[in-house]
Image (cartoon, one colour):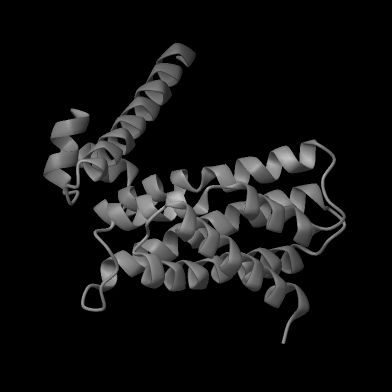
Length: 201
């Protein structure tokens, strides 16, 4: 019985990974992801997709959230190396050390841009950063058990929502280009946001 359960779990994990990989490939090809395309590319049924995800947007949001994984990894690495003087510094340094402009460029490409007449890309963009913020807050609470989880969540949310605001300004100014000049602007905007959140108004 254990072998059967293990095999079922392994098959489920393989299907989920195949769906996410298929979505990633379609995004990189510039194709707007649909259920039929996902099913064909992942070699699974439509039903299998909805056994794993609520909607196509959920699939795309999950792929985009995985792209923000380096922020979490950088935070973990930073803490493992001795951490910083405070929770705030841990998160700020993770944001500085991660190629967020490259990730945002991917997200923008994945979502077909951010236009006022199509709320879908904006919703997925916000959901992506919200999921990442939730994961960061859990990590932070584990690293600083003496801190109230609410305080950790508010801190992470403030910085991640700040990243969303910075991203929109940066995209408007650079069209999500990732050349040296655009990256320099990103760094400038990021530091302004970090300073403002740290000192408050």
